[in-house]
Length: 90
Image (cartoon, rainbow, N blue to C red; front, side, top):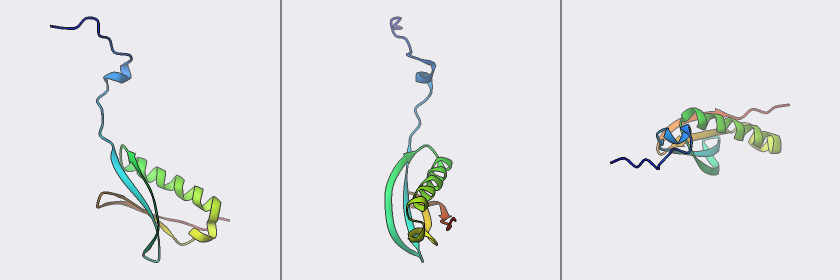
């Protein structure tokens, strides 16, 4: 039996729900972790790498000297997604 009173609020409601993955971000200098950043639930690796680049740009604008020569390590559980190098801009 079908409930004829039920309607989808929009077409977006019909899309399947995707599981979000949890990514972690850590700043390393000379092989040592110097800062653990808050993790983020994201859909895929591309989103994690994009967020990583935005984090680097923000940190370099606030304290470029401190972060020069660092890397931002991005992981999902134990899997390494990427390591992005900070650069001294200016």
